Image (cartoon, rainbow, N blue to C red; front, side, top):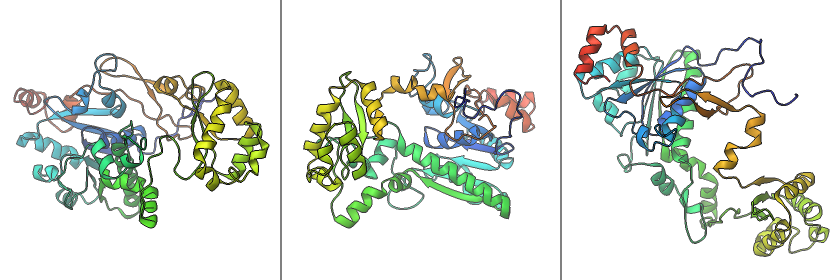
Length: 411
């Protein structure tokens, strides 16, 4: 059927295009969310990602919860498919020597240890790039490598607070954080794009790069619009629940089914379409209390009450039909159940099965769709699952590996 071809899945019988990062090796000394999110994007596009974890417990995100089939952490399942796990004790000289050998054969080294920790272990960007000028080194942190906040602890909620995001999220009475770890995600996406940019430049100049990304800088960038409002009006934007501080109507409205529908009108023609085509009130198109966006913002409570008085008498499907026919932007206010069952994901074949230590789990295709190429969707690794194979590649024989394991250097 037209329009139902799975996104990213080449038609049967057609040759598959190679993924753009095939042949690129990434060594990731990573934990939690930000760096694993960046490296997983690289793995999705075909890079080999060797994830270096602690011998004792590994990446602590493995233990945030055990909600995936009663054994695997949700964060870890999300962030670590298609990677090879090598467990090393970097407090030992032999453990550091193994990591040194791994990096010597890599294109990218990415780390998000505490500030200064990689340097203290001997894996600072200066030393690594002096040895291999083609290497791309990515250092991720909470607040950057300098400044008074350099050594401050930085978790997602803390960075959301410091960067002002929480101040514009929530109700007028209660600030709230975003429900997804967006400080980590923002930093991860900038690290991912930074690696891609550095690889492109290396392809033309032959030179690697030292890349630095901080969670705080990433969220501060995302806060630029509220920042400009504060900078040039002298007033910080108020928290406006689901609504928009300078646009109306822009909120969730009730339906007869008890499912809220979000309506976003961003222009006066859009208001005319809503008033005449959905509210059956063409008179409001020219009414001075409603005709312009600034007037509607001044009269927000009256506007919202009027819209809700109509939507609450309609079932969700009928309201969506009217809104769509009138060309008024809208969305259903879904929860997690609604996302899992979303017809758009099913119609576009966005789900895949991915292996893991607890069996196959469902995962969404990455958002970047390359025509004719299926993204890499390999299993989520068990802790140290690939240690022996990787050490063999590095020239360690079985006897050496057994000795290292007995000494706790590898796991």
